[in-house]
Image (cartoon, rainbow, N blue to C red; front, side, top):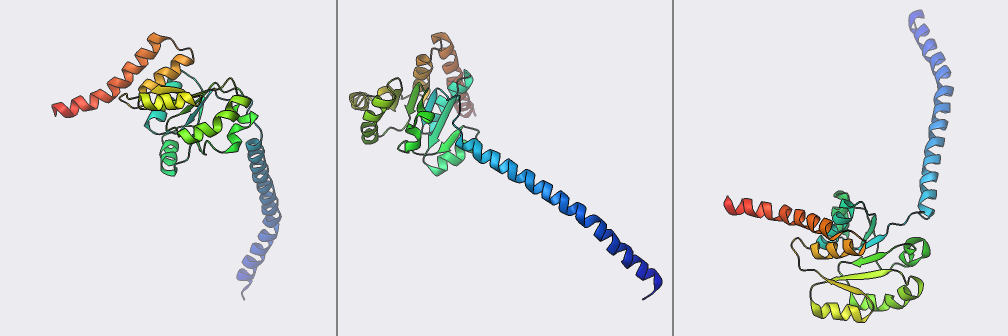
Length: 214
């Protein structure tokens, strides 16, 4: 081996020894930072939120989305749950604040989850499930108003009989009547509600008019 090649090898080995401790130190520092971030995130998930959104939307179908849009328009906080994987994926992709969970999940009936909520809105209500949850809701959350969005007077009577406040919604876009009723219950003025609803109707009517004239 020539002297020139030997000098290169010796320099490379020396550089490796010089750099290795620094790389190891940097690796330990980075790993520590990642562990601290992961720990803080996991701890944050276990701490109840101090501020609970006043509205819980159960089901982000078309009606649920319209209600969420209405609340966003007036700066009113909401949480939403959805138990259909496809609707959940689409809602998350579109920016809605929604979690994969069922109304029957006991974690949603604990004080940290429900205390302070004003409205619980069922966009696809089940009469059997609502009947089963009514005693617990009345006992632990007497100030919570549970709204069932339904399609007709017969359904409205059935849900009213088990303690829910029914709202009949046959609007275009779906959920417009329900959203207007929710905004009214939250103290939004009638003129503001009507102006918002008119904008939503125009948003749906304009594409239809364009197709009709095409």
